[in-house]
Length: 313
Image (cartoon, rainbow, N blue to C red; front, side, top):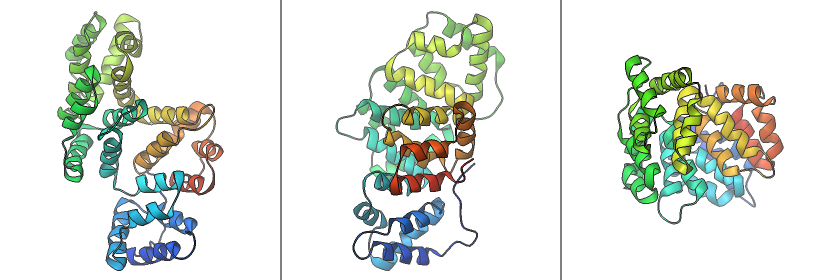
């Protein structure tokens, strides 16, 4: 469930565009007005504001935001602006699209791909081609390697069943295959072809039949980005809210904050399931996600993220 709070009476896109224009005028930017407007509008409303701003002022709102905002506030607001599918596609593009790719970049792209449903991935592939002129699978071919590459390409190109029904015979067969000294191609075939419901049943069957957690088998048989992708797939199949709560905890734990991860998860999940993520976070870590974000951020950056997260519960 979304945590974005929309006003009972939403101003028109014209009025919002006018208020943003006034916030940009003069010395400095009235950042509080920008945050108050954009953090309380849904994807379609933000899109209409952008169109209206261009029509009224012959200027691109995103470019204006980039020139007026600074540091993490700018990064967070700019990632927030696109509608969800374009947002995902853009994050993947920024992570793997050309240039040198580091460890965190690959994790970001892997997280987006491995946590999305087949229908979401189909939309991401389509908009990726339209927005960037490249096919997602071809970009993955260039920017990834080994079994990690094979898994991601198979995962984005395979049409998987999304319903709750499972084939128990196939579940048992898969558990037996993975219990053996199977090569990594077996993991790729099963994880890229089976539904989320099937993978959850597989994890249960593996535990029951062989007395070992399924994740332990994955960790023993694989490594690196390939292992990270497999674990992301199974953890999201079992409980995606718990998965993202853990990602957020890791981003804010210890010395310093991984703001790139914090921003990515917040802006991509607040319109989907942030309410559930907040509940998982509080249950697992004994404090609210809002309190954690408040302690790890400051200024307009903090205000923007907390506005997106909604009530402190």
